[in-house]
Length: 472
Figure 1 (cartoon, helix red, strand yellow):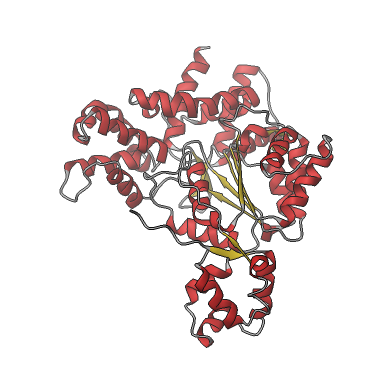
Figure 2 (tube, rainbow, N blue to C red):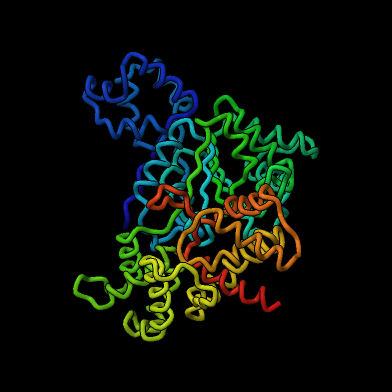
């Protein structure tokens, strides 16, 4: 029979206070560990709120000379809650981002209490938030979640907050939104709660300052109240496809309490790890390896796409990447040729390009295009038609170009389609909307000028929408 796992104990709020007081006699945790002959990593784990076995906690109390710790054990320590092991998105297929995870967790162990993960759809924001949460969950008493992409409940603040209070076991004294906000903030001020908010972009709307304000002002007030708490053990991890400008403005006053991270695709070695975990042959002498590297490069390490392709190779092609390649080689090589021509300066625009990166296979069309990227384009079309027009017409550029080239395209087609002329300020507002939605990639060219481009997957979809747009 399996042995029972030992009970783990962590410091309560009072316990943390007593330990911090005792450590004042030492220059740092390292100096304490050296002087008292304690294992630094284990003590750091104890100090940061992770669980340790009772004997270890007792040893530290003795060494730190915590007053009356035996009598006050139940006030100084508490049992670590049972860990979540089955996350909705983070699973055994996870690879990479080790340095990023380490960096972000250090920030959350410090003064940072609001982490914002940004990036295009399918880039791995939700999985990363769960991966981080899996590491730090033992420091919290409760975990609250809301996913505005899949959650059918109302998106207005009062309903979500009321549900959270119910999950926390707090009786709502008054149904007024102001009082519900106060109750929630007062609880978060003292309690150790981890809150995961997914797909925040569903709450955003335009304002006088551009895209990224909250449609429901109470969400803005919630984040403002949370950031203004002098100190709180509660942490928020938020994912969004769009930059919430309201949060950025609020957080600029509290830079130590806030961190935002824009996600890129997986690195080349991480892509290999992903294919390997899927059960594909990536050995050095394998023909499949070369093919998989080309696929990973053309999709810029886009995690969702690579996992969908891996699954299709395993399920429909007997884990044989060469067999899969025979079905997609023409479309992939077409894109490779276009990109090579752009890099060599032979071709900078492709007005008639017809890429199929977003619908190479049936599962790609279903899981990546229809349910993800096309939804992004439809949302953009409904919310800012001019920005939708701009991404469609700028998709003709094969390589990154300066802002002025994008605005030239916009000006040309606004004249053609609307018979209007936009001021430079108006043109910039349209481009800024695409920036806010993270649909534009920026880089610096050889002349030290900022240039704008599109992710290959985004360009593939934009080209299709461009064809439809001008057919209409």
